[in-house]
Image 1: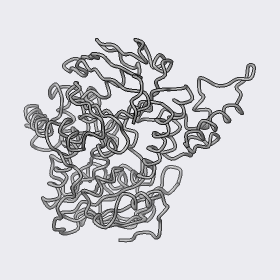
Image 2 (image 1 turned 120 degrees about the horizontal axis):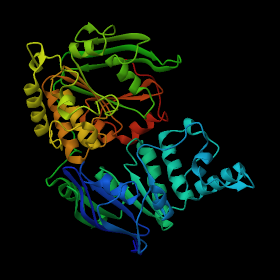
Image 3 (image 1 turned 135 degrees about the horizontal axis):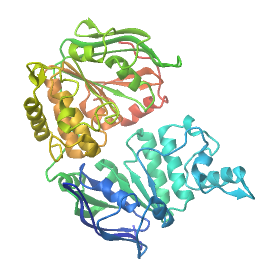
Image 4 (image 1 turned 180 degrees about the vertical axis):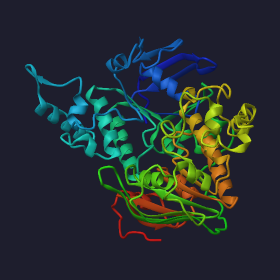
Amino acid sequence: MTEGAIELELRGITKQYPGVLANDAISMTVRSGEIHAIVGENGAGKSTLMSILFGLVAPDDGEILVRGERVQFKSALDAIASGLGMVHQAFQLFPTMTVADNVVYGHEPRRGWFIDRASSVRQVGDLAKSYGLGIDPSARIEHLRVGALQRVEILKALYRDARVLILDEPTAVLTPQERDGLFEVLRRLRADGRTILFITHKLNEVMAISDRVTVLRRGRVVHEVATSDTSPAELSIAMTGRSVDTSRRRAEHAVGASLLEVSHLRVDDADGIRRVDDVSLTVHEGEIVGVAGVTGSGQAELIEAIMGLRPVTDGTITLQGEDVVHLDLRGRRDAGLAYVPEDRHRVGSAALASTSQNLFMAYQWQRRFQRRGWLNRRAVERHARELIDTYDIKVAGPDQKVAELSGGNLQKVVVARELAHDAPVLIAEQPTRGVDVGASEFIHGQLVAHRDAGRGVLLVSAELWEILALSTTIFVMFDGRLVAQLDPHETDDVEIGLYMTGANEQQRVHT
């Protein structure tokens, strides 16, 4: 690839928060017409740097140059005016409006005093076609799949003539097919001379799509290299300071007695719509059962029903031989379930509570945290410090509120809490979402250790490499049903992805 002119330059960007130097004199150069990956562990400073670049946070020191001109962004509107666009992990779309209305919102073409909707549809349709985005401008947002929603966000940025696109963990919820489609779009954008900043934890994607890579560690740039001159191993060492391999399959382990049995489970939502349809599966001692599926396929409702967070319409849930359908969440925890929820903010933690409080939450009635009927604060703090050290949770101290932690460190708090109690069955939803490569390796090791101790794990993940690396058996959910049961040694992410989208559906799975 021929090097283009300098599109974006950061010089000495520094940002200090209480007790944390998030960005420490970061300097980097991004050229026009390149896909530039930015990688680093949680707490490395990626999110802060991108927030500064897009005008969401003001730096304490340093400067930003766009096409050679120094800029000072007071808001995201200033960044957009300078030709920057950002696609966030949490899409910012109006679900009841059409694609065209979302794309042109705030910049609507007009005919006199009125919005020219026909022009909106035509312009958005032409823009989508020119970049191969495959989006119907008249479609309602609420009817689109996740991959299409992401393309709408890209369209929004292109409509505002963004020359630099910042993509934050863009493949986190995509199937392999959707990921490949996104990469094709990014290549077209690069060919058009646009510049892409690609923030990710996935080193295989860095190698597949980027031209250059900048590695951040502890708020500093520690490595910048052409992608063709590096390797996943080298990048991993730069990110973590040590050699990490999360791709290898875990050794097989003897499977024992049944621990969790779900039989012919049916779950309807509040409107009477069936979300889980005749699902049966079993988790044994020494087993990790993986469940793959596109968001909205019913896996969330399945897990909520197993945990007692959602009523069961029909079917049974048996834990170590005991029917637990009649038990509430605490009753099911007491019976032997631990739970890492997908939503670490709303379900998995209490934002205004301290780290130590979150690390024993839901287990506070255990005797070791009690003393003569009162809370034993020394035991709580000792427990917290042990887990903070074991899981390398980057926190100022046990009293720091979890609302102040990065997403990856909050995830470590939730995972540490649930694994600390040696429950017979652990249900883990997206346990490494938003977690860096080193922390992912550690969490995977803890899941495997849980399995090797003769316990069971029910793993729900959108990360197919994770499902393939850890699972003894893989189930695929589509439209509320189990549509495939696969051996991880005899399948791959492409086959799983086809089942996830319904393209490879053959028959229902009964166990």
